[in-house]
Length: 361
Image (cartoon, rainbow, N blue to C red):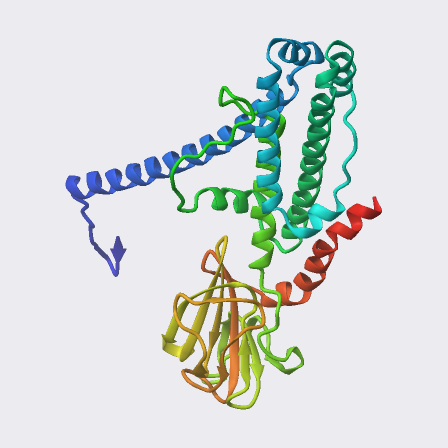
């Protein structure tokens, strides 16, 4: 570097250069590995679904079912009993509206052909064949309905700038376990792919609709008393431009503060300039923060629902007067709470009308 007629040199040793190069290569390898893992996971999920759809298209023909009835009527009866146990077990997991509003009709196609052929050859088995046809009709109807509800939930999440695919991945990656008690619809331990597809459709529906329950949807204080919005503003203490990561609700000290959505309390205490703070984790990377409280009505680990009282407005921390500072964070990144508080109630109302809409269709 030349300065005022003098030349100065900066020397970087070989060791420093090698260290810097090694760090850069390590970071690049970690990034490449993480991208490869994410890509493989997405490929496997897609491949598994494609495989199931292919299996679903290869269900037993009426000739194959006729052969089963011919060989062992008792075995067919046992299989139908197992299928009925499967259906009854699934029904216990379904919302009440799904049980009521799902239409059940007689099967067509191969199932109808099975009924006709078995009835002609084995009159004593005709009733079993009709039961099997009705079972398949119920399973396929439930699957279509679960897929419809899942699609509606996915569209609702997109309206709230949430990624349905990420919701599904997060749901499947949660800690879980327990003894293996595999489902089967046949004596050999296998499961009819149509029944398996119903299970997967219900899993997807449950994950997406559960995510919607954790979306901030209930105003933590009176919306008509918002005193400061999300975004850049003049800092009330030093007058300089600053980022405001939430909404401020003014109110008298002691005014109740409500949980914005269903979730679990993960922090209760003092947090720097926030003062007395409560944080609620809602799953899928969503977290809400309530600051400047005068008192707490919540404990860490407590499960709360939308609208539950968790504390009271105060002026603790970096505050000029009693108010609630409310934040919504996705993967610890602050987002505008108005998007949820103004949009979510309408979106969720449409979702809750799903049974009514399905009946209309």
